[in-house]
Length: 79
Image (cartoon, rainbow, N blue to C red; front, side, top):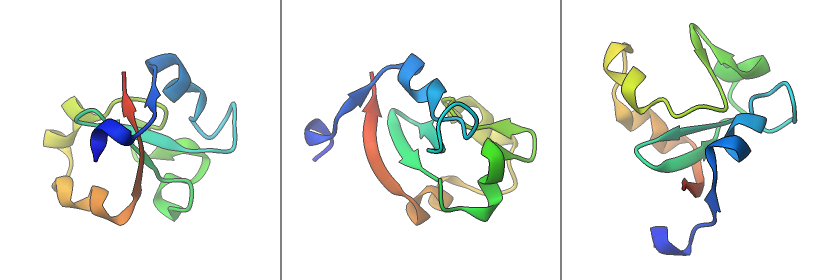
């Protein structure tokens, strides 16, 4: 299934930060999630984390696990 997802570059991901474009995307373990509808990501910021980035290395410092990503749709792969 993942092979069928569109591939986005880090530069394309960075534009979906809630500031440059209305979309708010984050990446985790090579997948890109659309968190635009999340009130926790309003304006592209969630606590000290910013959207438009790969948050894989930051998850260990968060109070939740990766299951939280199940709330959001996977819209692509990070290339």
